[in-house]
Image (cartoon, rainbow, N blue to C red):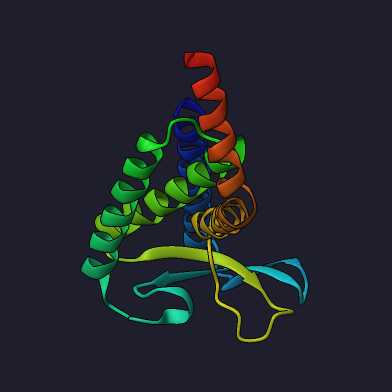
Length: 165
């Protein structure tokens, strides 16, 4: 669980620091967006009260409750596993860190601070570091569940039974 905790803390810190920096920059600047790579990647500050693409606008308490329940369920599942595969540790740390990063915003501010704006993807949501952690973590988690979990646990049980004899 140490790796999961460290990754989650790093994700939370990276998310919160990036949000504070972008808010500070926009508060001191008359600019509405900052082109990092013009026409491709911009920093555009948005206060999002909904989910991705602004869905479920103003459903703050729903997001808070679902995030807390999901995080607790994931932690219980991880604790119950006899041993954790390295990919499961990485994916879980990223998911939990991203979830808590946005949870901090929802509880403290009633909205999530988004700012990463890929302009070359038309109609794509503006997002933040926490969202990126959740997406990457979820992709890794899905890969683990689809291709590793069923092979990893029986091998682990077999090794455990042999060593217990």
